[in-house]
Image (cartoon, rainbow, N blue to C red; front, side, top):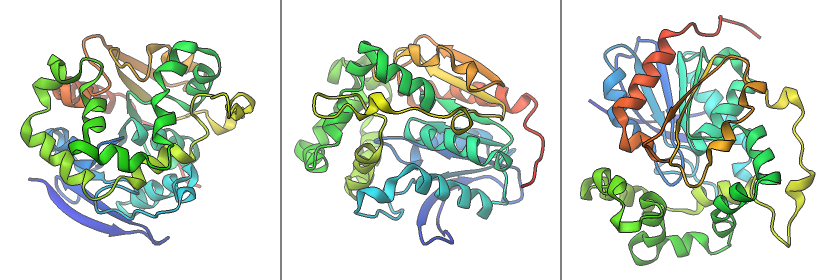
Length: 306
């Protein structure tokens, strides 16, 4: 059974959460992406609940979590602080941080800056910041695939996304095949669509603010600041065991983002899913559960203190 509750963090942010499993069990934490919400993890949490306390927060800006209006409230260090504080609320350390899309962007940062808070990291179709920067700077195909980010930075993006029963957001989920996409049609049922609508009706400004604030978006004729951006190694090196699951049919995040990843993640394993897209969590939940199980069975990071 899925529980819902809110957690008031010490720095004034409230996160609405979904959870399953015994309160005294080891913790798995699940972070969603755009334009999703915590409910996407329900099936996976039900799978792991007999063994773990599974917690999925709605990220800052989503559902009933705090949703500041100002763009700068969505800077990476602030979002990372939300997750670190939630982990502390849940006992200070999780057996795995499992994350997709924007949730993965936060999880990569938590793993770099707070390795003592997680035994292992599981990433699902979310680029590491160093390889994403490299591909956005040098790969025309990834630049083109990420062009949608420029649209989401428009000052009226949330209004445009809400038009015509969220037509543009359905386009994100259905992919290039649109309404005829067989992959999307298999999982994007009326019931699931209504779950998405319930979240989107509560506001889209927070979700698009993630795109407005990030420096990691493709260069445009009016803004080439990305080309001067560099990350020092200590800011992007992950030193906890990491398992990456990648739907290779992802049209927004191309497989080239996996090239050279081991330079920044020394304890890395990768599972490529050839017949899945960016929405592999919806398309193949059993395969994703299998990969998380495999990651949990591998040795985790040793307990450390700071």
